[in-house]
Length: 204
Image 1 (spheres, helix red, strand yellow):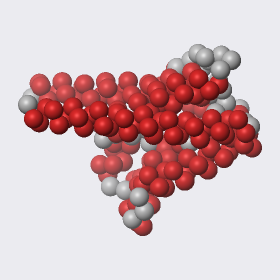
Image 2 (cartoon, helix red, strand yellow; image 1 turned 135 degrees about the horizontal axis):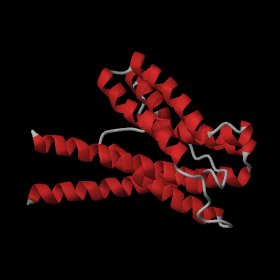
Image 3 (cartoon, helix red, strand yellow; image 1 turned 120 degrees about the horizontal axis):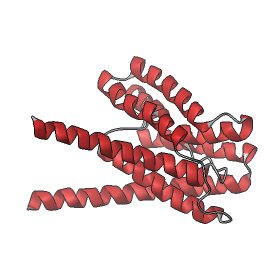
Image 4 (cartoon, helix red, strand yellow; image 1 turned 30 degrees about the vertical axis):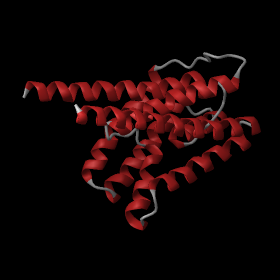
């Protein structure tokens, strides 16, 4: 019983660290360089650049709206899994300072930020958890129409990336597209590593 409790605590701790990686990448690399690379966090950056709405507040509002949709259109277990990340990520965004760690080099900043962001998401996926936000609509679309979740998420991220052109400039758009690609590669690499570790354990 105690061992099971320790595993739960460890899972929560790892999830918090994964969410902090996401918050860290956004506040240290994306927001200072005005690059919105998809998702609820990307929408939040666009809202901040366009109307000075704090990113933590925007992410919180978006996540709450998505949780409501999840409650009515998805199963309870999925909604419960979404709830923790949906509330904790805005808090971490609020308490993590915004600071440009790589001043004067937007490309390098976005590369580092994208890898960090991708690792954070990969860890969440490994735990079968989520940061909420725009991961919800693809789940609903998949449930009702059978369209692959990655396709829907790609379209949503693409629309958010296009928002850079209007609010933060053409360079930010290209950096956002690059970021989505790098984050996806980071997630796939982490998945491959995880699968190999699992396979080795099964062999042993």
